[in-house]
Amino acid sequence: MSTEDKAIAKLDQAITRLEAALTRLSNGTDGEALQELEGENRRLSTALDSAKKDHKDLEGRVIDVSGRLDGVIGELKSVLGS
Image: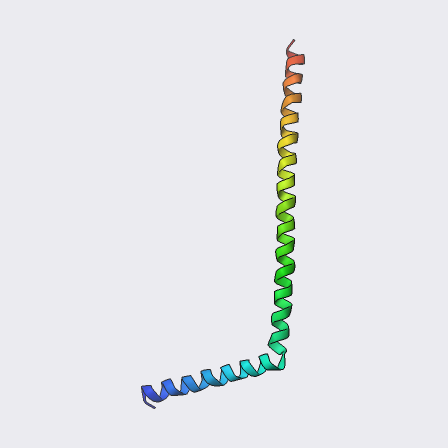
């Protein structure tokens, strides 16, 4: 089999695979899977956005609590030092 024949055989195989994929899509098998994956992607994206918001809120609280603790520690040092 020549190089050209091998290339044609590979092309035929690729065309067969492509036709099979198109058939699955038209039958809804892959289309349904794609819709499920898109839905899962949207759900995960929403969850990630929510987690980012929660993280930002918690960051603000940590900064607030840290400042308050620093103030209390300063007062304790002042009281204990006098």
